[in-house]
Image (cartoon, rainbow, N blue to C red; front, top):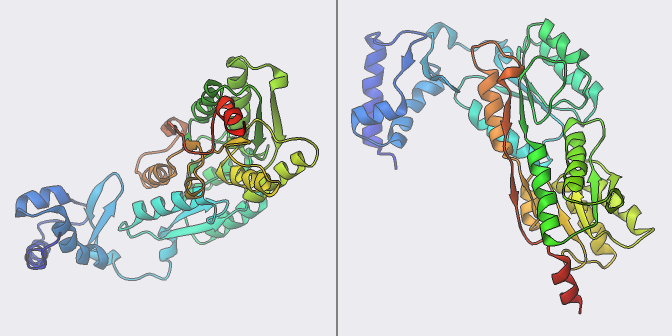
Length: 360
């Protein structure tokens, strides 16, 4: 807990340091831990004391660099302050995976003095170009993008214009910038291996859009993992879907219009899995009693439905992207970060043997 009288005394001491010019613009300011030790208080009390200096612009918290003293001349409001912002372009902030990433990015950017500029692409290349070109015209030079396509032309043109660029959740071959991605090969392999260990021998993958890098990675990983696990080509099937609830609902509705439900469904992400579950339930089928269903992403949506899924750590993706884009060193594909996902088992899966026993 913070102690107001102590934080006030610390603030008065810090103000005297600035008056005596003990720290000059560009200097690294002592960390919260160092100040807590110096004043014999906890870090919450220190942060309370520092807040007035951060809010006034005398101090700036930078991801990966600590707290830095700012030039008072730069603290006056500027009409062009938007050019200090970081542009974050994502498909859809209402999509639970991206909303969690956005929340983490905002938290990492808080206190740096830079605004976060949010743009939606709706998975459309022309929409992304429109959003990004608007930022460029406003003087924005730091951007984090979730590319809706795998064509490098547009992104290389941004590098030619001096944009500091980071990709998040996806890669684009032929563009020399870092990507913050999940190891989808590891995640999808864990799903398939788990289902095979349960005893499932017929799997259906509801695949995401073929134009999107993550969807292609998960589909190819599903196919490779199934074959490695001993399944025959006729034991696995890929059904084209999308990345939203309506996509999973439509794909499963079309399936059920012509044949019984699959033994086990491996969805491209959590919303697709939830859409498939909704279609199954409307036809009177229960999960997992009649059909085993898995998702991908471990979003709030999936957790609320008890979905067996893959945790991608979207919050870490957002934090790492901010760290890289605000760094001072030149960026390249070598700075990419691959995050190892984890299988999370919940109630949407069961073994065929237990299912048959329950039915009996």
